[in-house]
Image 1 (cartoon, helix red, strand yellow):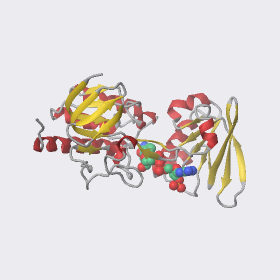
Image 2 (cartoon, helix red, strand yellow):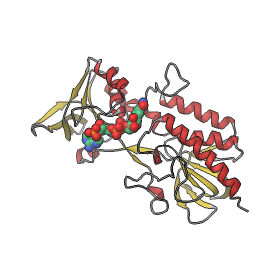
Image 3 (cartoon, protein in one colour):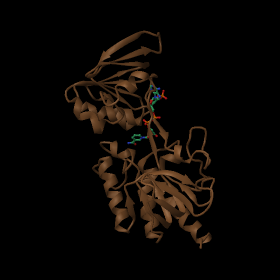
Image 4 (cartoon, protein in one colour):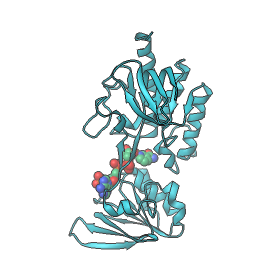
Length: 313
Ligand code: NAP
């Protein structure tokens, strides 16, 4: 257990957090990044990223985050593989407590804790989690080589997961609750060209079937006529969106109805002076790696200017 006073703490290590770190370290704020339990953030689960500028051939999410992390370290950002488990934003310096009870007294904080995968919330999903139910095709797709799997959802995540799985698995069912996809046109076009992907339109997943060995199928119900049917699959990938990781800040900082941190206008200013937010944790709309990175830059610039105007003895 120790106590340390610092100028700038960055909570979270996705594109927003690490980009904030590049800017904050170059501005001489000597930031410390607390990575949380998933260094690199949610994007490390993405197999192929083709829309982050600077990578003409695309790059994996893991590779991208390795590059951004190394860039932050080049300017002497300190990266701690620890989680912040408690915060007190009631007075400056702000108090952050790590999982091993270290106390950080931070003059400013940039929150970039991202978002986590949303679950369907049905009992059988909980039962078979890790036994055939997953939210990460890049992590778990390998286990379903030449097998049949289902992906639930119709957004960019679901379609990218289905595309990736189509290269490994025998057959991929994409279970979509409406009669249209939400994913970008480029991803939709790639998916529709895949022969081993079948889209099950207007189908709502109601139960994941299985035995003591794991998942054996998925029961869906038609939103048109209520007809129920089961498909035989050994893996079910849930990709139905995200929820912001703001549990830690509830009651201390202003959140919107969906739990995202509210920021002021185009800035990263939150409801508390000296606390800034970047990336998916404050973005219910765009949620791209590049927009998260951009907002990380904004947060560090806001933070630098604010610290100059509000020095703390
Ligand atoms: P999303 O865009 O919110 O899509 C969620 C999908 O899941 C929708 O098709 C939604 O159906 C469906 N869904 C939600 N709840 C459901 C339920 N209970 N049962 C069945 N289906 C359900 O989420 P996302 O795909 O994770 O994407 C989030 C953001 O990240 C988006 O802005 C996306 O563009 C971005 N993203 C970008 C990339 C990329 O650019 N490479 C990759 C991944 C994600 P409805 O359409 O009916 O609501």
